[in-house]
Length: 112
Length: 514
Image (cartoon, rainbow over the protein chains, first blue to last red):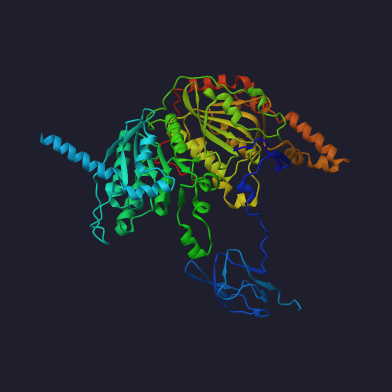
């Protein structure tokens, strides 16, 4: 499995860097990104059945945003906190993968 | 001469059933690049050693037009035989008979041979090549699977169980291999998954091929579900033969001893490891330099390659090797490496195989993905497995042994019987750079030239602590040894451990962090 002439890379474990090879699994690992509360992402792949808001709306916390059907379940996606709908990136009927940015929000007090 | 007539009738009856699904279905099987179930058994077992049972078993399903259907052997061949002289029980699903689908009688043939294996204390080998549950039989098929899983669990740790995936093995069926000790897969032939590509696409809209979802390579490299990966069925069968010759027939025995032969590895053991702890090397070369004939059967070679596990022989007797591999990810421990080693250690312990641990690792893999994947609970499996094991446990620290990883890699504190260290070993709470940064933080920050001060303090730390002598002074290391002495000492340690008797408190079973 090890190549004839492997190309070793620097790999930091705590304060020291080691020469080594990386595995495919390590290279494909999910790199952590701090979640942005103003981005509503799909938590599961599915189909957008209904959108209850439009861009520019100020929506109260807990109000329905859209219905995402996945695994034969109609998931009601709710507003996490009161904010304005900045952009809607999906349309009814769209089949979307997991972690698709569906709706972008912005604070209410921001002047447009 | 009526008996002669009966004999001829029997031969005729056998010949028909032995054809399985018939010429057309066999042609299809061959076109897929696959051997037939019978060919597989005959190629795996010693010549003329196979004896088949339950050849004339028939299904009893009446619904969905099944009453008129004849399924030779009900789609599975079962029997006993030997591999390199070792007695075994075996079953092979016959894809040419209704896609090798599992009905109740098919399952009962399998559970019968499993019961036999458990009673006779011989290994059980299952060759899987089946489209899954025979839908026409409904709940009967499910009952059959459940009865197989139950026996897999009962036999676990008593007899070695081997699964060979030579075709599809999907849905519930795939849990039987998962419960067994070793899973063999073949490129382009093995397909294992719980839900197949069709369901995944319908439900989630994700498009993926069978091969990308659950092909041989995926299970050998990504999931760790497979232990041995081959490019052809014949290569796979050779791997099984080699494994069977290295493991005992049951937990009541030791693996067969063979005439010992010295290692013949060309490199001097002193020249394998670079003295700079940052430089990589292939730890398998150390194993080659230590094991009889320099032979090593690696298990799960492609998955979590940052730890190496496998079987070799010392003085003709089987031992299990567990070694950090600096060639990959600097040899760190992570979720997969811990799972891989822990299961192997438990196999060795269950089957009376001494464990030799070769240690050179810088610690655990840092990362959000690791922490969120539960490296705490995965890493704990390894501590559990080593602590619990009562077979002879010997550790050689080759180079780095830092922090929690030092404890995890069969340290004295977890019950190692013998702890050796090479003179270049660094046994410390963490790497010298990290340790110096913490201990001498104030001095470094207050220095005019921070970098120079840091370098100086790192050097001080290396000289004082990054060596085997601190651990040796406390008796945590039994001996600091020259690399050239290692094989001799291992042979001696194994010899004096032959009658090892280790006490464990009574329990129904432990509760390992599964």
